[in-house]
Length: 279
Ligand code: RP5
Ligand code: MG
Ligand code: MG
Image (cartoon, rainbow, N blue to C red; front, side):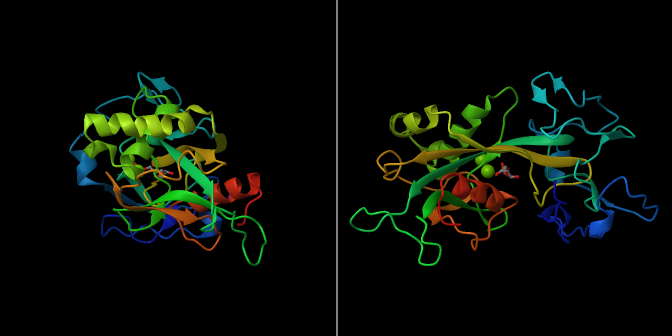
């Protein structure tokens, strides 16, 4: 498992807090570092105790490394350690402790739906890349409102929610604007995507995400699944419309040169390799 990089970004997102700089050779908790002095930060939105956030440690005793009621506090990376009652980021130091923008102590579980099709010309012929000569894939991408970066339309798994439902729900909320749709429009949207999402899809990744919101005590984990429209008949004509935390939505070419949020580029590389597409 490679050292996290975005989880050590200088300025913590949505704040003016600067992380304590962590050099590559001191990321690992096993490296003794007496001078390590992380900045403490938990966003005001989290401290207001919304339904999606835990209370502060001390006032409650979560069951770490376990299914805690309907909240899954197990990590895909195996058991994580607890230090003075606080879970420790399994990939090491981030220069900031507390929860930052994340609601849960320990893992915060998300799901990432990667909806793909082949890029085609006006005659419907698959387009190959000039240099690699491989066919080009396209995926449904959203521009995140929080940071302006392009990303997979993923989101948090609600307590007790099946990941298969999170994948479909987040896709319809962020890429099809289902939260603003009428009951009739909602019915039509579900009819259009249900076939694609009822296939099991290809599991691309499961585990830690190198997310800029991660802290020493809270981090993102995800299950990324690829739903591929081979013929271009099922999802190509979808009425894409940005919704919820997405500012824009578009079909984007799958290409190593396209910068993406968190570890998303790494997930798309796996999809491209699996489908023998251009990368
Ligand atoms: C990333 O944050 C995950 O890969 C997922 O795409 C996303 C979930 O967070 P929100 O979109 O709900 O902010 O780490
Ligand atoms: Mg969302
Ligand atoms: Mg989201």
